[in-house]
Length: 168
Image (cartoon, rainbow, N blue to C red; front, side):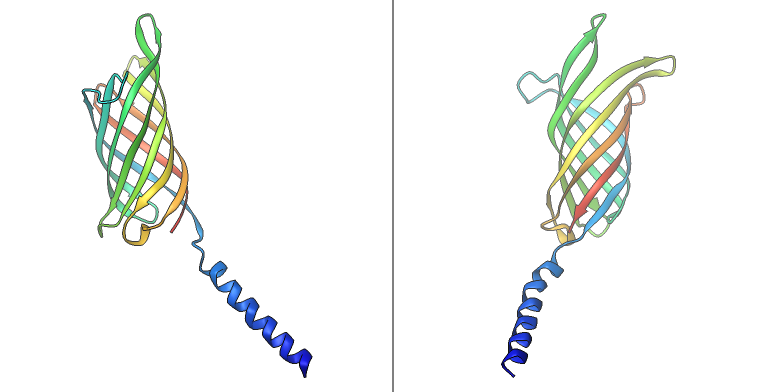
């Protein structure tokens, strides 16, 4: 009988301790694509050449149709034939807003490479990001990943494709 009580107590304790583990937020894939117009403002960061902003829209996993606002400072790192060739940006902020008003806020940073082609001037951008905030179902979210973007300088638009994971 003492053995049965001990086993029952161990089972109850195991279930009690498993509860928090079962309640942990699962890691989910995150990704999608946004596109929108670019704005280049006077820099407000030491040594930056411009302050980049964009209001884009697109589709993201877990959010559906979104609007996205991005803001960060940009620096030129190398020149070729007196023209900017590479640079870096960030840290900045990207805020994705779902149709229901939930937000997911990322901190972003990265590098870019300017390329002149017969079709025009393009910037190829590598972005890194981490989740820093959120509201609604994304309150307390975490995660991180990357993105690849192409900016058509002549058309003044950027399209970015995101990949990574989030927990919420």
